[in-house]
Length: 68
Image 1 (tube, rainbow, N blue to C red):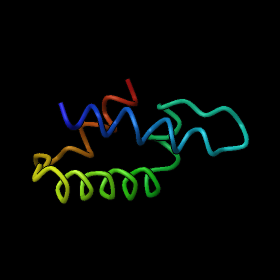
Image 2 (cartoon, one colour; image 1 turned 45 degrees about the horizontal axis):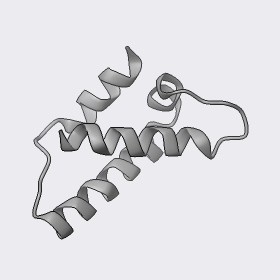
Image 3 (cartoon, rainbow, N blue to C red; image 1 turned 90 degrees about the vertical axis):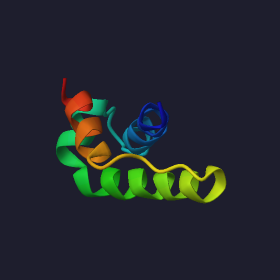
């Protein structure tokens, strides 16, 4: 559930700051470093405020979901 919340916030945000329209698939394929940094920053904020940790491999699962 938290992975879905981080995905729903992170991927569209990274796509929205591009000059050209960018969908989730393109973010996962071409902006891997930025997306990874954003996901970990959001996960750290969740961990700090709500005492929540995402399971190992969450970022890879998000990329696979975005590429589908």
